[in-house]
Length: 141
Image 1 (cartoon, rainbow, N blue to C red):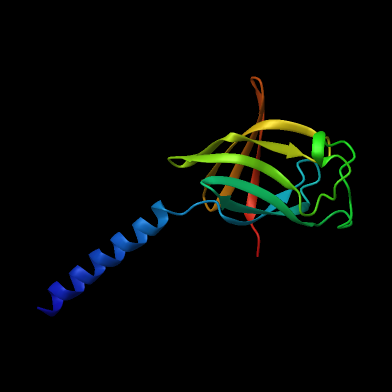
Image 2 (image 1 turned 90 degrees about the vertical axis):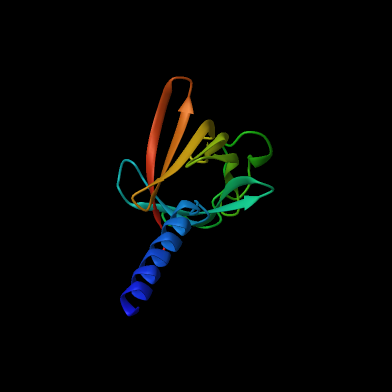
């Protein structure tokens, strides 16, 4: 009887853990890394609002927190980068988040975006036509 109880408990625990992993999403804080230097660049907080996902810069690690985006288009021009949504309107489709855009505040360019988790990291891909670049973002401590 004791063996059956332990087996049932082990199966239940495995199912519970696999269910939690299946529902894991990108919500949380992620550390971005500069492609050229390999240095940590910023902390971006991904959040959900109205069924869509957004990413807001919460800390700049290589620049002062009062840095403004002079190259940004539209309403973001001249705004502080900290507090700015750089990822907008992402929709979860299976294990992938897509359909939104990502802003590079350094260059002021907006790209179509796709995100997914891989090995505990967040893969963020920006598209411009057929060209794309993928960055690996790491969980922020």
